[in-house]
Amino acid sequence: MKPPRTARFWIGLIIVLLALAGAAAGIYRLRQVQAAGTLPTTPARQGDFSVIVRCRGELKAKRSVQITAPVNVPSLRIVWQAPAGSAVKEGDPVVRFDPSSTQQQLQEKEAALKQAQATLDQAVADARITAEQDQRDLSASKYDVEKARLEASKAEIVSALQGEESRIDLGLAEQKLRVEEATVNLHATSDSAKNASLTRQRDQAQTEVDLTNHRLSQMELKTPLSGVVMYMQNYSQGWTNAKPFQVGDQVWPGGVVAEIPDLATLEMEGKVEEIDRGRIEVGMETRVHIDSLPELTMPADLAGISPLTEQSFEWPRTSSFRAYGHIRQPDPRLRPAMNGNMDVIVNRIPNAISVPAKALFTRNGKPIVYVSEKGGYRAVDVELLARNPDEVAVKGIKAGTLVTTVEVKPDMKDEKK
Image (cartoon, rainbow, N blue to C red):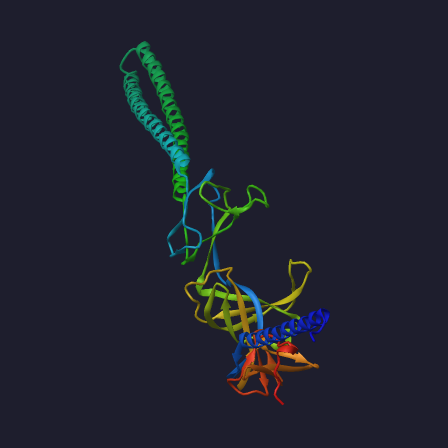
């Protein structure tokens, strides 16, 4: 006898549901195995562990020279400049200004100098002619006086009338001689004053020419030391529109155009949190890392620490100390204002087992790591010896042990008893 149709329906439905449940369980178990096999792991490393205090900062040059525009030169417009960030040697040109206006002024000043010199030469020649003419007139007057004196000496042998006439002629000749001497002195004084005035005018014109030549020589700014070119901000269009100086910009006299840092004096200036200040001291060994050169690690020495904290301009405001790391051998690729880290070594643990900091987790308030074993994971309690920002030194596992860098979920663990 066949079962009723309703019973067959429910039996088939139960079979289908059992099949779906088995498939779901199989898929779930497969996903567990796949997830367990794809978790990232890293081996524990054994070696000397350096306990560090990490300081974030940037490179700065301890010594630098500013390139300033000339003070007494008007209309300074940049027509050429060395590329920003390019390396320059001592004596190389950095900035050139437009010399056309100064060259035109020089031509005008030289023409004025030639005119002043010609006027002075003409006045000297005229004074020489006048002096020679005055000397001739003076000589003639002296001759007339001597002649009249000779005639007056004959008064004893000639008539009284002729003698009186000779004495009168002598007086007139002496008076004319005095007038001629006064004229000579007047001409000499006048010519001397005129020549002195024209000489001052010529000297003034020569000074203007020399000054213009000096201004023309200042149209090219050269670096006094070797380094890299860093152009300053041009605030002529306002603080919000400030940009580094570039070709075509007008520079005010005496303005700072560029700065040449000495690359041999580069040091890392980093921020030290107040909680870490008591752990470091001057002279400690440091390591400098640059963000743009991740493969580079440079040994340095902690050269100084600021005595007081400094407030940052960030919000919220924070206070921190400043630490300065002197790089022993700066890399040629280093440039000021590069960001990076300065790791101050405060202690060393020999033959320590270390794992990445992200591989250390906490369970029940105790540090643990998840060890990968035979497709599963086991939580192992460890003792924390030292902590760095990137890695930690632990005790409780062996070197080479594979630990996960992500936390294992409860349904992904296969703990071994």
